[in-house]
Picture 1 (cartoon, rainbow over the protein chains, first blue to last red):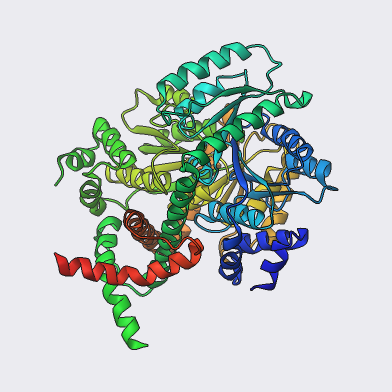
Picture 2: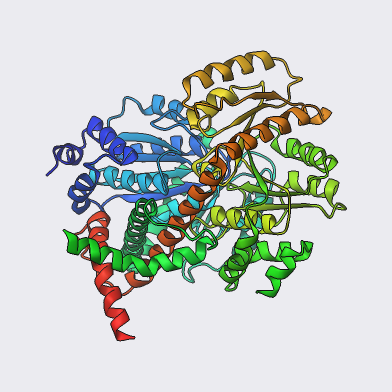
Length: 313
Length: 313
């Protein structure tokens, strides 16, 4: 076993931090590390929290952590901001949170910004969640800013996705158009002390009528006021009810299996792409041929090139 | 030739709009269309304009279009916002711009939001630029919001990348950290009527000393005030000087060849991924095996599976 894997399994804080850096930096030992950790994953409950900027996700997560700690649950957080060039805990909201949980050995928070190569952020996030899982954290929160495609992709790894909206500014309509309504299993109306709460709840319920969800799970709408530390119990109850629902119907297992399939396909596709990219240097391109036709021809050649290479060895 | 391709080559506005919808929606005729258009591309000058939200890119592009029209140049714009769920010209800044150029048949503006599958936005943007190129537009502007990885990827297709910053709020430092400094060939200090202009220029020049650029092209810093319609001539001069510089050294051709190689690799990788994803349904996963090891095993099997399939046909 990789020595770092052993230390991660022991829950050593510095080992977790280093392991996450390994996956961020695509360290040569990464695959060995992930291979060693994998058999020890699958125990944590993974919660995705998403919503538009300004919905108050960071402080919501902060108070949720506090609530979970009161329940004697250990917590890992991966905060993802694809639009941020910063990484390694440098996000503003994160620094604040880190401070408030800095002395708690059972809370681990890490930020991920945009960096690395294709699919790098999504890849690094998935691996980080697995590292935290293997380290023994009971609950892992994946927080993403915004509602773009990459955020939707990242959310695939969560057991339960909570969408945070506020009474202000048509968040619900926005989420509806962005296709986030379809993936959210719990709706959180944060800043529920602001006017317009009931209106946004009605809007959400109306939109939920239109959106095709799992027949047996209609997403509940929960009100929270994170600055007042209010609504956490309800939020956590809703998340746990969804988790139980998945477990009882064997859906949790299915969901995680599907996610691994997706991951495998991603990794394979990425490697094929790298492989093609390297080969491209030595392949003469027909300048009159468009990329799609060239790609098609290459796809057919790939097998022959590989066969030839294997024979040469 | 695909009938739509013919109409695009004639510069028909509605045909261009429909062709872009084809690439956005991954229409079955897309590859045929792109194949037919490809031999007619490569004539347009492609300019990338990027920068943080709030830098005033939209209005800058608006006044730049006006300037280019005065020079009798036809213009295509693809405005990309990966964080937006909207598409098809629904972005706010765009609606304003569209109004101001709506009656000009020689300006075509299209917005792209986040949608479609993996790499969908970047793919659709590249194809859209090619459609506008084939339609005979002289200048194509690719505008991206933010400085994430997807924006960097998109910028690969531009001949010249202009980075827009403002005197406010440490934009330059931000861009430096995000790795955008490395890809920008022209720097635009917009809102140059605000205090702090000289300070940000000094900052930029200092950072340019640190960043490795093409030895013979040091990015110029241009001041603009888009609300006053000021600085457009200088901006366009700087962009054109860079374009001439590339052309004279044979770098433009090289750049475009490199970009096509990258595109081909992307398409091949994407198809491999789709192919693997479909196969994954029928492949039994070893539940104790991590995604990386499974992917590795699959990569080795791929060739055999394909061979087998070909033999069956």
